[in-house]
Every structure is written in structure tokens, then in C-alpha cells.
Length: 288
Ligand SMILES: CN(C)C(=N)NCCC[C@H](N)C(=O)O
Image (cartoon, rainbow, N blue to C red; front, side):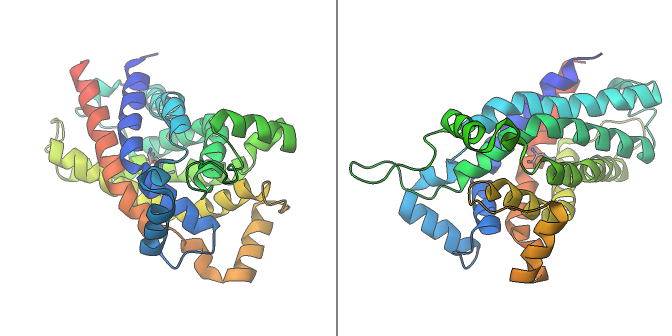
């Protein structure tokens, strides 16, 4: 099993993550809190109340976990494609895999990475939603003191399975959208690259960026539901499942609830995925 794909997936994911985390914090807050009037209002309030550091809340754990999550996504994707087509990534430009194979491999990568991602994503979302400024003498401490304290508290208060709250919504979000993600990337690269050649850097950046936008646009409704289910344990709010969370969100806030965070998700998706694919492709080419 080629390991370069796993290592390239890790490094490229970490680069994308640092770039996109401030957008991600604004998105999570817009999706789960009703106190903001929009993106700018959320950014201004976060900056005034918590300084620039507020945008980077909850980032340390994803940085640590991206090694596992992104390498599993890209590694399972490439190795599934290898199993389906019996060709390695060095041969894909000369003998391109079919879009059906790319879609199946993407869905498989998305499905498998969910079970590594779920606990890390839950902790990230809980920490991003803490709007208290950094501890000042005399001010009440935030609910969670950091990622480890958050993980331990969830296990104690909600049981070890509490760490997988929202995992089903995450599976429904990521399995098909990862298929869409890789198909969009491949399709855009092939449209602008002569047969047998590697796509140029500009093509990889644009195709990666648009693949991120398209897949996140499709993923946003389930992303909202996933974030709400992850926060539910903390608010002692019990949803009976994904459909119950959807129905109760629509009842209270209308259909527009499914598009909360769509703009910021798309603005974040372009640079994050452009950088992710560029570094992934170049690392693989460099390793031959
Ligand atoms: C729609 N979804 C879930 C995705 N396309 N995910 C893959 C992109 C991963 C990248 N680290 C990011 O956070 O955008």
C-alpha cells in the first residue's frame, strides 16, 4: 500500500487547516448561535470581545488530528482508486480513471475518515463556541479549559459515546460530498490539461478551490445539522436524530436555516482546498 499518499494528505491538510480556521470559527458560530446579524457582525463581535485569538479557538486539536484525518481521506481515496483501476497515481494522467471510480473512491475516503474526524470535530465545535474572552483575573472561567479538559468533561458528563455526538450527520455530510469533491477536482483538471500531461499549478489551484466550493455548498445543510447536534449535549437539548433536528430547526427558523454559513463556507473553501490540492499534487510529484 503506497504510504506517500497518506503523508502528502497530512501535510496538505495541515496547510489548508491553518489558512481556513478563522473562517471556520465564524461559520460554526453563525450556524449554532442566534446572536449574530451576519458574517461581519460575527467577525466584529469576536474581534472586540476576544481579540484575534478568538478566531483561532479550538485549532490545536484539529492541527494534531489532521495527521490522521486528512491522511486517511487522501490515503483511502488513492488506495481505493488503485484497487478499482489497478493503476497507481503515476499512471493516472496517461490512463485516467473513470468518474464513477473517482466518485466511489471519494465516497469511501469520506466514509472512513468520518470515524477519525468525529471526536476531534466535536471538540473543535464546542471550543469555537466559547465566546468568553481569554481568562482575566476575577472573570468566570470558560466552560472548557482546553481540548483535553473538553474531551474528559464530555466523557464524564455525556458518556464516552458523547464524543461521537453528530457522527451520523457527519457521515451523511461527508460520504457523498467527498465523492463530489474528487469528481469536481478531476473533471476541472482534465478540462484544462492536454492528455498525458500533469495539470499546471494554476489549474490545480483553481480546480482544488472550486472542488472545495462545490462540495461545501452541497454539504452545508447537513453541516448545520451536524453542528447543532454536536452542541445539543451541552445545552441539554435532546434531538431524537438527524430528522428530528432538521424538523425542529426548520420549525423554529424556517428553511433558510439550511443555508446558514453558506457564504463563509464557500469563501473558506476556495483558499483551503486550493492550497490542499496544490501541496498534495506537488508532494506526490516530488516523491515520484
Ligand atoms: C464538503 N466536504 C466535507 C469536503 N469537501 N471536505 C474535504 C475538504 C477538506 C478540507 N480540509 C476542508 O476543510 O475544506
